[in-house]
View 1 (cartoon, rainbow, N blue to C red):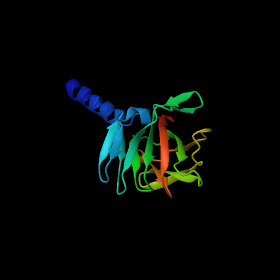
View 2 (view 1 turned 120 degrees about the vertical axis):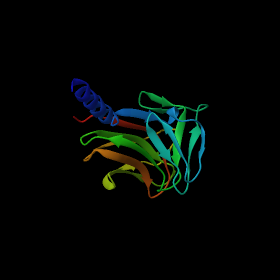
View 3 (view 1 turned 60 degrees about the horizontal axis):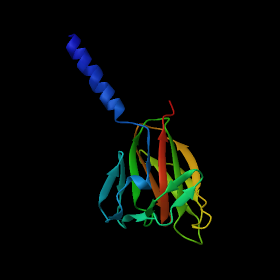
View 4 (view 1 turned 180 degrees about the horizontal axis):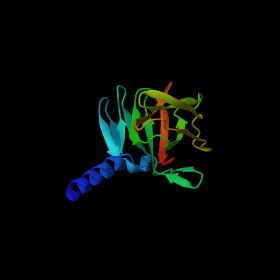
Length: 166
């Protein structure tokens, strides 16, 4: 009986561990294109090219400095259908560092939890000389999948951070 209880406790802890806080940056992904309908994964964060595709761009010759962080790559979401998907627990805090890929128009970053919009974060216009990024946060309301995606056009994503809210 003790072995059965131990097995159940271990299984429950493994399931609970499936929802892990963490951070992924553009630098964690391999350079290249993510074809429409294809995915790549880094640190349990799945980048989905959806219908228009995405790319991991090399910026190592001119690294992008955002505060005290430096990025040698950036994720280019080519429109509003590609996304980064990951597991969350209710109460987890999701923070996104991103800019619009447009030099003229800010764009939205939409965060979805269990199929429902949690919120939009404004991604400012792209300016390589003076990079300004959104650094908005939202809180997950349900255990399950969460998606971060551009909304209304292409965006550059540098980092997605998930912290335990519990």
